[in-house]
View 1: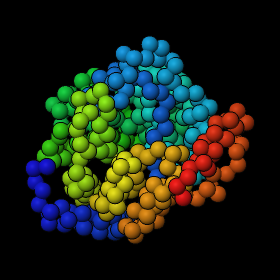
View 2 (view 1 turned 180 degrees about the vertical axis):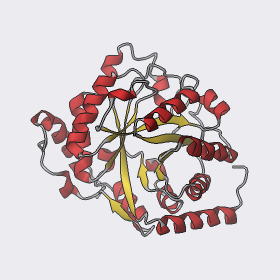
View 3 (view 1 turned 60 degrees about the vertical axis):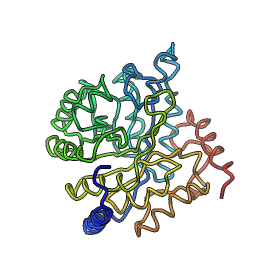
Length: 331
């Protein structure tokens, strides 16, 4: 981090927090990305787990999740009050019509449209009320740096997709990963991008160093650097929805990210953490910011019956999710 004046960073966080309170951002959501597949036809983003799998997976169809499993996960998120951050899958893992069908089923379960993060697509006209918005995996808003870390995801094509999504009446979101080697000055590119493409939602993640990638031995970004980026963006865009992701080994980031302007938090293994000391820690972090929590990480009564409330075909998946949650030992 080039500019690490602590007084400046604390001032930014304080101003962002005051702005968030003034805007009435008093409730923090728990967000869950629902994955469709663990294979990607592109498979060359330098930070991504799926880049390590492309040459290993000889039958991509086998890397697809069962649709029943996906829908059961959506039903459990709905029971627990979690938002579905988006449906996510590698390129060419599912067809547009398959994604549309899954999204429609989730819409029927939750009563709400679904965000998509399924790659650059020109078939947006195929979607309707089942879709709330389209997410572009920008990852780095600096065009030259983005080309380096995501060589097969041209930024201009992502931008064209988002502009088209807006023309069709969909909301627009982007994902940004911090810790890839960008500089704080790259925030200016991000601010310009949000303005130019009228972005409704930004999802920040911190780098998760995966083995077999060039980032395997890298560290995650410093918490105050992360906070400085988020608070700067919040102050630039008071009405923007900001979701921040952190990992189980960095739960202490949550409080400072909320004070920096986050509306929601994401990137947790829901069923492994539910009802554990880690889930409780998430709730404690939110409590100490003075915000309320939408959804739960600890209330086991919200798990509900071991049968699907919408489709008997989902029963076996629902039962497994509940059993996995109930056997967690750390109370």
